[in-house]
Length: 315
Image (tube, rainbow, N blue to C red):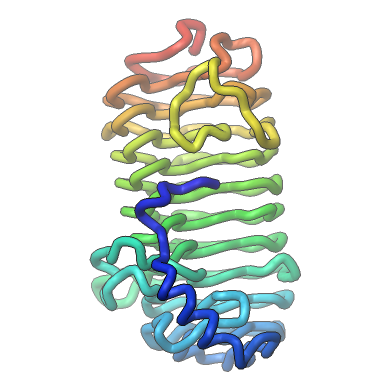
């Protein structure tokens, strides 16, 4: 994925400092996490129950893979009670610091299986992953994310070649993209909101067989839900897809009713075989529904609700 370069360039001097600082630990193995996690920079490998019991900060150090917490094993349950703060946000996850986002808050690695990550309301706030390049990243299989929150990240939640994983009642605000599913298959985003992100609320990118349902993708700059490969968000038959097609996905009962600056639900040319069932999309500035394939032969639309659409065959 290409994100606007001007926003995320790390100055050359900072890169040089990172290289010098890490030269002495090249190839070093990250420490194992205790069951009660109070500092960034550890890896969970053994099965069992773990908790985040203190606010974590990137300044405490990261794993060898650039994460605050990496999960590499099977049958891990992680309960998050405090914030996980990257270099691009303040300690309260209330604001961003442009160009400083880096690293990953919680990273479920490709070796992980049967992982459960749960975010719990503590007094008057929800713990969040904020100020990271990727707030939450899932590469393994059968990972369940519950009530996860990500603010002020480049990507709030990334499913990268993940399979049979889900995010239920998760909220992503003020990121570049709220949720991205890139590659992989059989993943689910159910409920929750993706709001006020500067690119897309939910982006299905070169992936197949996923389900997005009962989500609230509102007030995003380009599109609430976007299927396809154009990083500019322009849905037009003139733009061919250059990556693996986004196919066989189901979008059902989603509500984009508070207005995105371009599109509510948008499909790029080459994204085919997807189903759109009983979604509601209103008050979006250009179109509530748009399909860049230029017709309704390649995707199925049924009982969707909208004011504006292109092409006219969308139902």
